[in-house]
Length: 354
Image 1 (cartoon, rainbow, N blue to C red):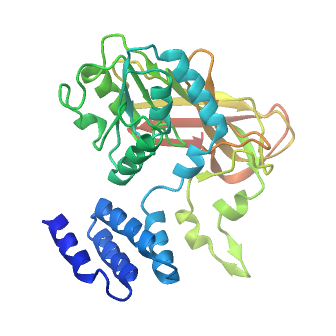
Image 2 (tube, rainbow, N blue to C red):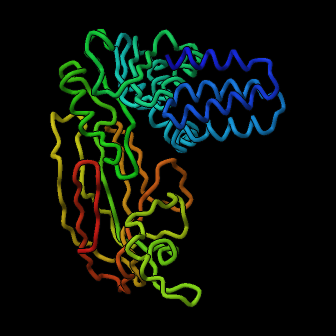
Image 3 (cartoon, one colour):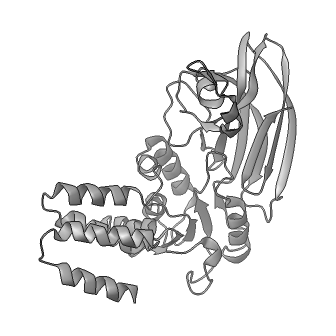
């Protein structure tokens, strides 16, 4: 019914003045009604038909730019990530394999798997716009017959319907800056039980959460509230974010202790605890100020290849470390020890000073 109504509306305005603007207006209305895929299709049509109409073009681009999280483009262009994943998939995939991907995104890893020799790549994506774009990219690169993009969550895939037989390999990159933020563990366990052949490998093989004491020159501005412009602004302090992403290559973040691994997950495991905790004591390795801890993730693609968002001056990576401030900065000397507690529940990670 929605498709028919859209077809009637667009046919009724075709050839009229401001055709592209009216297409955008319909797309904007559809987006308000949460008809995301239809809004995407109409906005792209409006962009094609804009013909120099600056307003139509800007509104169409604004709508299209709002449809996917902003990390997709830098992730596709991340040479470090692409090289590591391409190497790992070439090593893992054998001719004739049928492989499964959870979380297509725009299709980069599915293309790599097809190029590496997979007979069939079934990849699922719950976002209908991302799935549509991935199909188009796979077709444009000549792999449309190998890569099957299914617009579903992995938990909704049906053996014998969406996959002809259990997959010989599972791969995915559905990990947030905290590793567990997109709730990947239940999806991996479900796939292991329902969608994979016995003993099928998983790429990445494992993932870990690491942290270290750190100083960040912007901590007082970004994380704390006491006074500003001569006013007491402490009332907003409780609303400050307890975790702030920072640039992986920022020269303003400096680690003040050795690295510590707080949690590690074997992605081929049959199950994972729904919660866990860790208490540790970190030793300061320099005199100065400790503002909090910085936390990062490491993906172990295989025994030889890993990707990490650990902060390194000058580094570049689409994934980011997360700074978690202490309530107050601590003046320290080399050898001082500071206790830190970390725990997770479901898809949420918490870190605080003990």
